[in-house]
Amino acid sequence: MLEKFSKWKANRAESVPSYTMDAATQAIPKHVAIIMDGNGRWAKQKGLPRIAGHREGMKVVNKIVRKANEVKIDVLTLYAFSTENWKRPKTEVDYLMKLPERFLSMELPKLIEENVQVRLMGSLENLPDHTLRAVMTAVEATKENDGLILNFALNYGSRYEMIKAIKEIATKVEAGLLNTESINEEVLEQHLMTSDLRDPDLLIRTSGEIRLSNFMLWQLAYSEFWFTDVLWPDFTEQHFAEAIAEYQKRARRYGGV
Image (cartoon, rainbow, N blue to C red; front, side):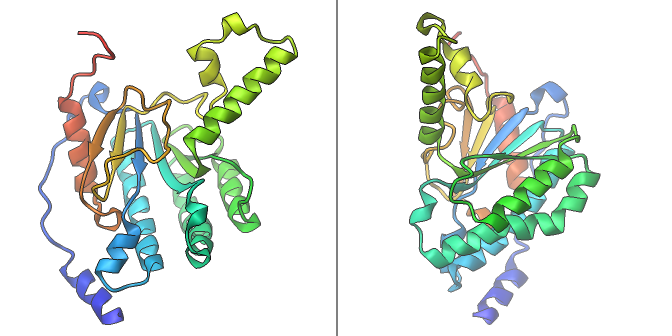
């Protein structure tokens, strides 16, 4: 197994086409969201356990965060663990719950130095203490940073998010704090977990799957989508640049002409 992994590492330096992003600030998407898919399949293709794919995928997170900061993206939201992912084997879930701690223990000093602000989006319920402690430590340590917002969607599901928002609005209506006639898109958005963030301009999904998987269903209403067959552990800075270059070619009309 280790021999297969070493062979893959030696052959990984395959050429990736070079893409040039428009240097104009207005052409860079302000908020990029990524569904990081394909870790398990990547491992299976190499005869490795699924956790090997997640471990390699964590390294890619580091590279893409650096690249997003370099090109001056304002917000990078990463779909790290969904509310549905609890259905996976316990050994895999346990490993996934250790990844935030491992990633942040290594990268937090760099994130602080590079003025990155870490945020968490999702339900805190069911998260192990060590996972929650690691993420909240990073959130607290970087809260004054005003550079790239690194927003981890952890134990997140869009349907859960919207139901939670609707319940909060209903509670305010029952208490007489809100009139039903005043409920509009803006009111709902104020109760979403992204209330102080702009909607994603660009959604990237790896691994060849073409669906949203319960991710930011409201916020992605007018986002540009970019799908690739590349599995997340093979996703590079050049693939990221390709996605942004493709985004820059598109005309966003928001229902107009």
